[in-house]
Image 1 (tube, rainbow, N blue to C red):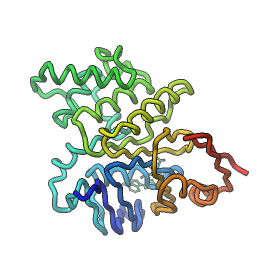
Image 2 (cartoon, rainbow, N blue to C red; image 1 turned 180 degrees about the horizontal axis):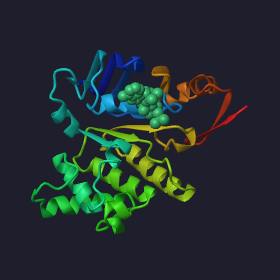
Image 3 (spheres, rainbow, N blue to C red; image 1 turned 180 degrees about the vertical axis):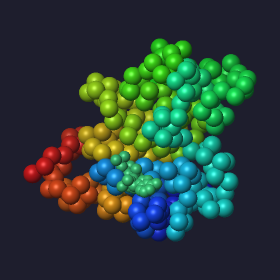
Image 4 (cartoon, rainbow, N blue to C red; image 1 turned 90 degrees about the vertical axis):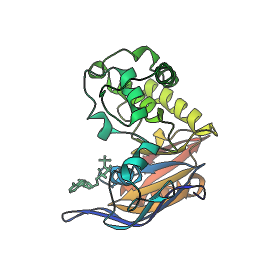
Length: 261
Ligand SMILES: Nc1ncnc2c1ncn2[C@@H]1O[C@H](COP(=O)(O)OP(=O)(O)OP(=O)(O)O)[C@@H](O)[C@H]1O
């Protein structure tokens, strides 16, 4: 696999007249932690969908975990990539308990289809829920959870199958300040663990980048505007071009903030 978990070359995705992704070049190594930044409609979710083997490029090539997406069985690849985002969140049955939702990921399902999960599966599911601060929600139905609680349960679920690549679409969006800081602390711990998979999170805000994230890819109008190690690529100039307004970026330890100037 060469240490590369993702390799996109000239990736382009079109829907009708719209170009969702345009000539995207991106490589993710197994020990890297990436944040994908960009304004609404930039193509971030489309990019993640290609990385999750859920959307095939119309032009260019995408290799996921060393397998060309065009040749590999997408279903098999999907089971090796952890994914949490609204595309999953919107399909969960309201009546499903948090624990069943997490455990079902071991089998690549979003529901129970009569499988017999074992004690080991349930033990792992409970441990993952606890790790993401959702241990007390194990027996609660998904439909009764708050937005922040759902995020935690879905992240726990995305790790259940021990993925080699983990993709989180806007993990901190919609959380209150305390909830955001708690989640960012847990994501920083995940980023700092050498046994963690390669990580990619999508965000609109530099304030939502957890400590320990090593690389940033910025997008606008389906194109990559900047990409590289955070210490080089996270500049006011790159952010300004990406978001289309004049921005100043500041670093405080391993956290970032930005404002218009
Ligand atoms: N099936 C489709 N047909 C036409 N346009 C589409 C389709 N799917 C997505 N788009 C458009 O492609 C663009 C990129 O969408 P995408 O969801 O990838 O952006 P995003 O960066 O994740 O946005 P947001 O931050 O608002 O979630 C948007 O302008 C969207 O309206």
